[in-house]
Length: 602
Image 1 (cartoon, rainbow, N blue to C red):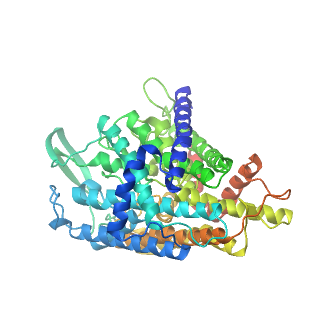
Image 2: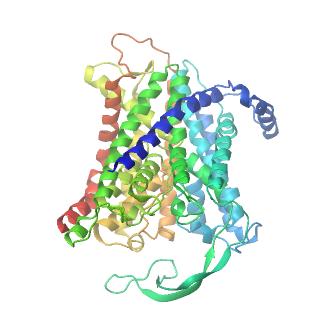
Image 3: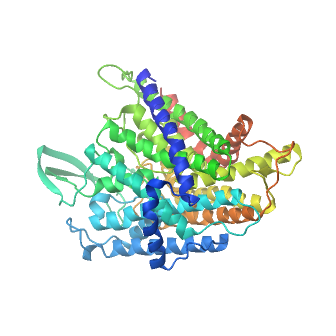
């Protein structure tokens, strides 16, 4: 990697770490009800909102009631987003004149945005009206992110409290997450993005003459939207020409801000953050990458502050950072090396004054390899799913990294809230394993880790691999699953495996070679997104309730310190061994064998 590339990555990590402590401290104050002076003026409006909604903000909940409130809120969100898509043609703010979204696509999208996945089987600018983009998609970006933060705060209270049956109030945690954290940060970021040229308007789409007439091969589709293929398995195309170009407009910056800050990832445009109206400059790209990790990183400090020992939060953050840097090094190396098959053909892939070198397929020239690989590693570590390049065009090892990070459970920073509560579950497993090795009852933050706690933690870790691999197996067996694959062999398998991993991991990015806007994939992936998000929140809340009811045990000479270097490496080992081993055979059938085949061609 060039010196310039190393400087860019160092600058990114430096800015991120510098922002972690102040934002983490602020969020701890918000969730503990100790509002800083500069936001106390909002408190009367917050209390008025509770009274209008009939919410008793002083009434705390047991974990069962907390989970029930979360489920009802999720159900209402799905119904609202589904209804808006189906009624789109009759609703205002639709200057494009777009018709209603099909039932299966509307179902998939409603589940997707409610679960913070933001998987998109459609092109945003050609499918969704301005009203649906704002009132359905952008609003759910706030709600789904806040729900993840609320569940995390409930788990933190489980560690911080003792001999109590309550873990907080879901409605209060949701409201404070939005009003005091997500909304202010989104306003600041949206204004910064507008200054860089990100579009924010209600104008109709603009039709302009093209510089020259363009002739291209347009793939033919069947009635279900699948690409037609000939007897040899090749796509069937027809010649098409165009003399004009339609330039999409819309309220982009406001959705882009919460898309990144809330680790949502759903793009206003089909090209997502590779589109110049979403991500036009190197600065907008840098801000997007900072935004994806900002809240997940700061929540580590929030965790340490709320449990009364900030060293605990720093230990978790260090473990996340080490994992991230390791995966980033693999991605950068793989993409910088390029394709050995091209080298064998005499193609020059070395960086020079006239070319960036390496594998530039599927990448924007304004970002290059370093920023594209960095963005891809961040977005799949952060459970965001925004992309500024096509992961499908990465080298096999470069594509393996985003896939593996998702399959680890999206705990390397992860989604806002969900990443840290996933990592804390791994921490519980880590101290349990350590306790087995030394023959002591495991403890974490003064709480004994007992059978019920391990059962709940096991559900969080074991259910995702089961449904990811089960869904992938079903897709490769059924004709409707194989019909959407654009590439044969190992790469086609990787596309399917990535789709189900992304859905269950609530990431939302994709190997774009898979045509997923079909009834089979819309329904199957919708189910998996729901299980991957809502089902896993329930055992996390059950664990929170169990921990809150326990007595706090004073540290003794036999207690294992969980803020030390040894614990950091134990946690990293647990994540890699427990989280990754389930997927080694599947990865061997996809990116690993594809890499070996590519190396042989070189």
